[in-house]
Length: 116
Image 1: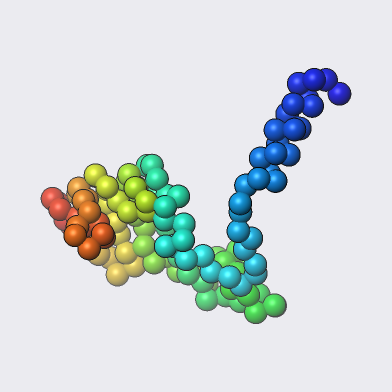
Image 2: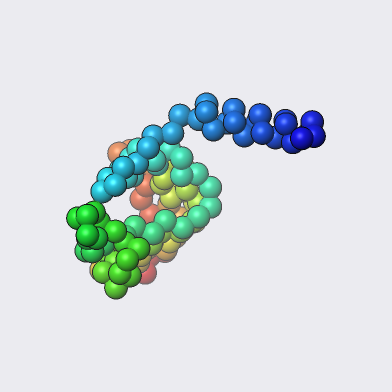
């Protein structure tokens, strides 16, 4: 094994053992508040749900795509999981908001500008 290969192995071993990752068990939901501080940058967030349970009674969105429901689709620039600057959001009821977003006093972002 070359010296470079040894260094790569040492690096990958040290990063996997020191990263404090929380394990997710079956049938566990992920709370948006727990991960929102990690959602920074330009992207798209699709909130969805499923009505399908597998044989072990776990909610499983991968088995029957027809049982999945889109709750909302939001895209733009995110800071701590909240829209900032220009973005757009549409929910399952058809309510669409397009424009600029800014944080309000209650820490939730509110749209201002054009709405559809």
